[in-house]
Structure formats: C-alpha cells, structure tokens
Image (cartoon, rainbow, N blue to C red; front, side, top):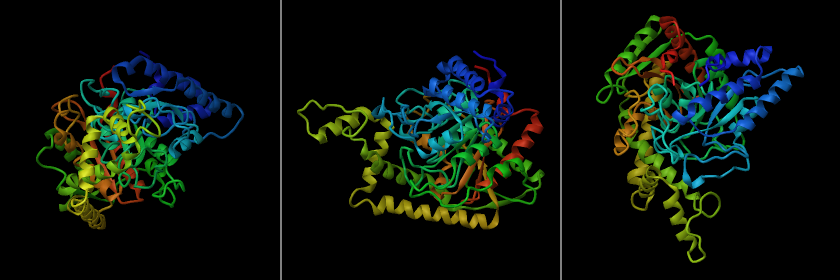
Length: 499
C-alpha cells in the first residue's frame, strides 16, 4: 500500500502543483496507479485500468508545460470514469455481460471534453448493470465495497466512482444520475456528487438507460473540485438533441465564493418520516441550523406530489429502458449466444438477452414492456407522466418561495452488502429523496454533513436548485463545506478507516 501524500491532495491542488512545475503529471498519475494496485483488489472500484493510456496522457501534459503552453484548470489531474461512457480503444461494458469485451470505435462527447482538458483518465469504474440499482451489487462483475466499511455498499449505480474517490484511488470521477446514482453514492461514501440540470452535460456516447432522466455529472471530494470538473464537461453539444444551448452557469466562481447570507432555503416536509434513520435526520436538522446560523432564512415547504415520485419513476424509467435496451439483440455488437446456423434471428436474440442480462435488468425490461403494452399504456406510463408534471409544478411553486431546497440525500447510511438483494422495494427506497429532481430535470448536489452516531457512517446533505441555476448548488455547498471543515478542523473523509 502506498502512503504517497500526492493521493491526499485535492484536484485543484494537484493542478496548481503541475502548472507550477512542483509536480509532474506523470508523478501524480503513477502515485494514483500505485494506490489502485495496492487497494483495489479489496475495493473493486475499477473494471478496467488503462495504465499505459493514462501515463501517455500524463506525459503529453508534461510536454505541454515544458513547451510553455498554458495548462487548463484540471490539466494532469487523474479521473475515474464510470463505465457507461464510450471510450475509443478501451472496453465499455456498462457493468453487463452483454457488452463484455466490447471496445467502442468512438469517444462519448464527455470523454472528448475530458481529453481536450488534459484530464488523465485512469480507467473505467464498476456500476450496477446498465445503471439499474442503488448498491452496485447488480454489476455482472461483482460488487464494490464502501471504503468506510468494505462489507457495506458504496451506493449505486455509480458505486465504483464514489469508492474510487473515498479510497483515494482518484481525486475526480464521473457518474451518471437517473434517479440518484451520483448523489446517493456520494452520500454514503462521504464525497461530493452533482446532478447537473437535465441537458447541461451531453449524453452522446453515454449508454442510455432512461433517456428523459439520465444525466452525467461530476464526482469529487470537495465542492470546488466538483465545480472545476462540472465546467469541463458541461456545455451545448449538437450531437445530443436534448442538450441545452445556453452558457454554463458560473459554477467555479460560486464555489470560490460560497455564501448563504440572505438566501431563502426550503425544507420539504415530505422528505422525512417513516423509514428515515434517526442519525440521518439528526445530522440533517443540524445542517439546517448551521444554514440558519450562516444567515439563511429557512422556509417550510409542502410538496404533496413528491409522495408519488417513487411510483412514477418506477414506471417511467423501466418503460424507457425497455425501449432503449431493445438494441442489445446479439446481432449487431456485444455478446451473441446460440448462433449455430439452425436458429432464427429471433431465437438468437432471445438466448443472447437471457444469457447477457442480469436479474434486475430483466425485471425492469419486463415491467416497462408491460407498462407500454396495448391497453395499459394510458393506465400506467401515461398516468406516471401526469404525476411527473405535478411534481414539476410543485418544484416551480417551491422555487417561487425559496432559492434552494435542502433534504437528506438518502434515508439511511450505507447498508450491508446483500441485505436488500432479495427485496427490490427496499432497494428502491434508497432513492426516495433523489428521484423528484430527476423527474423535474432540475439540478442537485450531495455533500457530506457528518457521521450518523449509531453507525459512524457518512450522511449526505442534498441541495436542490432550479434548472440552469446550478451555480446556486456550489454557492450553498461551498458555504456548508467551509463551515463543516472549520467545525471539525479537517475534511470528514479523513475519518474514513484506512484500507
């Protein structure tokens, strides 16, 4: 195991030291590759480590600096990339056997932007298959452990990215958020995760689960690091028809000037009650008092449609995944099973999907296909979309009264691996607080707000902002983070047990 102090630096600190010549990008990359080699056998955050590719990127950054070229704000900083974004020449499996060994011939737009910014991509991280899950237990390649307690889940679907951060294998990571898959892993690992406004980060080259909900976003250990990464990956992309053609909000400026003085902060009564862990509520209530002490006005909100969000989501998301996953037929790319010359294309497709898809993917495809079937479309999918409109209107009314909304990110801390494996409903409840934001398309962040006293595990505070007001997340998040650091004297993650 390596004790190299480089791995404890923030992304902003690493970038500054590389730009000044105090460190080389190769030194930084080698330090993180050594850390991966030392601890990832226990954590299992990565599905593929691109050692040679990462070192080649690092050498290119060092060559630029030696030539006197101006380096970007994250040049030379290592990153762990969720295995849902296509990467030319590097495997992209989406955590599924059906794409095992598939090497894409092109980069996702997000991947291109990372490379253009000279961010060093260390490899691809583990995830729930096709991003369907809240624990990373649904990966076809085995679960990832939470660095705070390796017997517990690191969240999902992006548990590999959050675990890579929490175990100091990378200072930055990328996740995707369909119903909370960036924020929920951040909450249970004591890291920072942001779901940008829907359409703010290109989905081109991101393997689709639920097209009207999926959103890529930044993961980091500090609010400023997340903002720096957000600025790199966001922006309009003509290759994505859902991409917003508007300037990126000033997220880095907001993160550097955090303040809540004079802001109205909403607390929604629907985001607490039965099923919430006592320690989570305790830390959340303390966070609300902290915000009040920093000069914010706290406003109680009633958003009745939020109680229906979970039901609506688990009709809309499976319906869209049923449509999106139809392309995995064993005929075009990926796994092909049963093609012995005697079977029809339909039989080969059926056998391939049976062998290639895991239980949770099959469950959601069947649910979605049923909900979209003749005679049931209006009763199920149509009704869920009407509820989605009600939730959006509840948010609109709320944001007429407040600047941001805060809530617990998850109802509980990290639960033991296997505890909810046979209880899909209990697993789905992990996303109770995060789903409404995806349905409405606005922006949200999770950041650490302490440890639950009953199990000494991280608790996340969720901040929600209106669409295209992502900078508010960073303004509030930076103020809260600074207050916590001042209170405890060090980042919460320093308390994580060593590996």
